[in-house]
Image 1: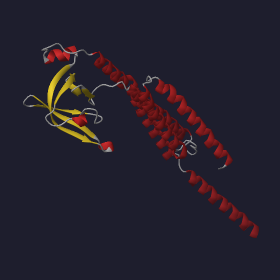
Image 2 (image 1 turned 90 degrees about the vertical axis):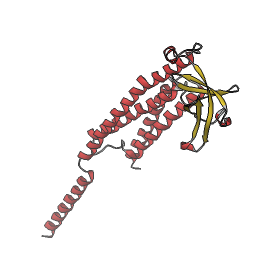
Image 3 (image 1 turned 45 degrees about the vertical axis):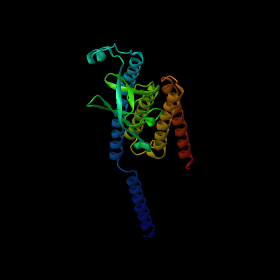
Image 4 (image 1 turned 60 degrees about the vertical axis):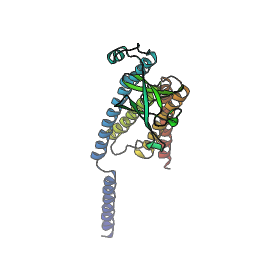
Length: 265
């Protein structure tokens, strides 16, 4: 009898342990739902990447080239001629008010201008100098107009571009587009693993692999974009450097996590 009781107790304990183990693994429904959601997010990110390289980057590059090639408008040209010829016109304005407010994300650099008796225009800038910070109400300035927009203001030989002026900074367009593309690949892999292995997606989980890779992608793309803008390196260098670097980091991290899992650390 004692032996039978011991056997029954062991069997009961084993069954309970097995049930707890199965419960701990959890049903595959939720991981697969998360996987499908990640794949959907990867499709959205891939679409943003396509838009950046197919539309945004060529558009900004073409606008900058058109602005650089624009010539002064003919004297006494009408507004229609200025628009059709895509030329540069100059207007005289009187400064009504300036706002120079530096405060991180809430920085504001703006000049309110008056042209004629009733016309008022606002010009926004990316920084206070070299002209905006010296302007006072009543000062006379010359505005350079292109496509009906103020591109720059000048006074006594000092000129400052407005925020609307096209800039040769498409490296950042490439960096943001590439960031979207890499995040699309990352979320697709993590989502696919959860669909195929819903009970054991490791190491393709948020902590630590997903979190580290997200930080890596954002840091590398943003840093490479800024570096190429500051140095004037052509935009194709951004993907040429960023993709191999991120792939290398992903591989090193993956091997490290797999090694830790095998060793039990």
